[in-house]
Length: 570
Image (cartoon, rainbow, N blue to C red; front, side):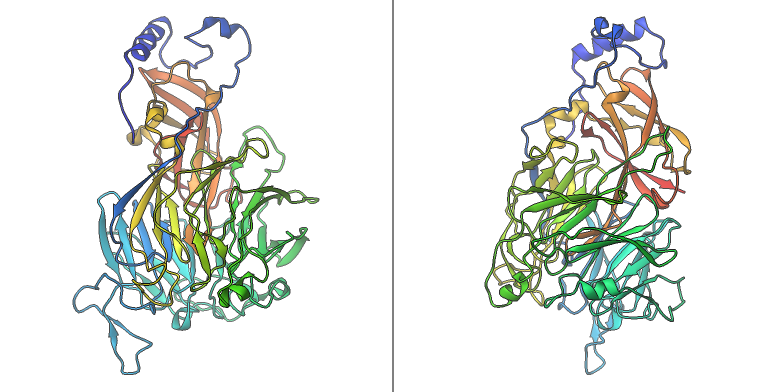
């Protein structure tokens, strides 16, 4: 999708500019139009394109249906399913079968239900998961280990760890949690520990214990009882870590701010009316990009968005094969504001079971899902094939853009993820109780990549390229560091750039746990060679704003991001 060709005119102008100015000095004037240098710098508009994206089939089969998906710092996709959906298409190595807990004759299961996909080399490696991961949760620890909790039956109280070395496999502790956590949500905290909230018929939360230890008890949360209706509609609650260290928890149509240190509910926000938003109603939610500034002591605002969902009665009707349209609303709430109220706008189409991904340029992608029904086996129809681009900083009623459609329905149990090259990996879909290849919406193994509008080939010349060998491998809280990048743009100014830091989520059932994008504070921009620049960047101030761990670091030029590099924040 990229080109490295620099137009001759750009090269000539840059050469003239270099002859006229000292290399490595800050760019304080416009070399193309010196008349502009007399006044204040005007912020340039973002690069625009009529390109609505492009789809590419990258693999005919993942061999394991991707009910769960996470991207590791080693550029691998970990994808896995329930263990009781039937034989996958990926065998375990000979002699390495797992005991089958569902067998009445002490049988074995010799099929992998998890896989590591190298999306650079296009290679699959089977992984051996022992306990049932059906409808479980997860996130990445500070050292990059995938920490994964809950599930079904013998997996409901399990915590699993996956270090992604070339031969690593799951390490499991089946009795780590105090109660069953099926359809629960896991969230990283400022110190790098994890909290797990809710689950089917479990109205409490607890903290993931150290490996090998077990929780004797948990903390009751009556709010989860209060938000349960006839078809639940409050499973997989939305949990976001606010910039003040508190937890925003949303279930059904209500939300609270919980202090996990004192176990105190600090605030209840106004209800989000006219529908339900958690499983099985399955709206999508994200903490919008957090903008950091270096010279302020004011609290950092944090804003949540929730899009789509379904009527309170939609699941009961879907069970009778009556499918009503999903919701079309997108609503935003500033959770750091005591008197916050919801602000709502309308999506171009209704949507349920969508994934919501924060893009490197601070836009939001809404992808996958259906237009009618709810989550559940066969409880939705009318796949929504068109992704939506949502620009949070644009004017109201001008924020949505409908993108190029896929040809593959991605219904219940679909997933997606942002890749380091800024494309989107799209996987999964199995609205059937077991692997089924003849259903109206069969079990889906095909893997696609979606290329958002910023990957328009005509924008490639504006795409920054971080010099990886000069990029830091780790940064400490509050520290300043330099990023070196190449771009052919003339007259580049600091106001043209964003540097963003992205925490990849654990995605399942339309919920992207632990996803976070920060727009970092930047300072001096310098030209150091022909087409090569450095920018001074300040790391996030604390784990409250950005929990420790591995992030993807991007340079964005007037809304066009370049490929990211991994950096550990500690």
